[in-house]
Length: 116
Image (cartoon, rainbow, N blue to C red; front, top):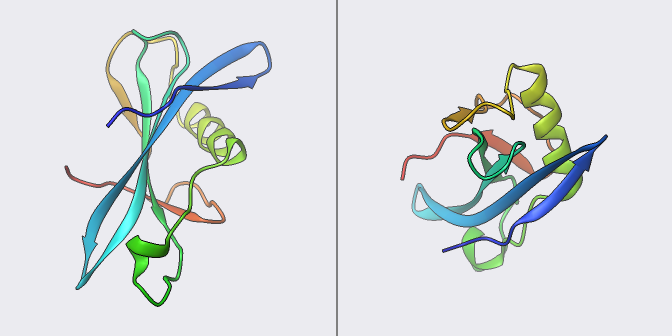
């Protein structure tokens, strides 16, 4: 599933980002998470990746059926700012920078690592 590319401008730099909705098992239920990918130096640059687990409390039909959480540009900006401070070089070629779990506090998400 391809996600739509969006642009986030920070100063004079443009960051391209995409977010894909995914699901993971959580006990007897499933939980929704969003795989966020950000590029700061073109399509061949090293990407920043963060898996954002929704902190939604769930509705009467379960988490996955009622959760609509999606990262806002403000969330993406917080992640990019944190990654830059942690050493991510958006101009590096290829490779990926994985944001450490629980490294950024966001109102609707928890940063995790999902295996898939």
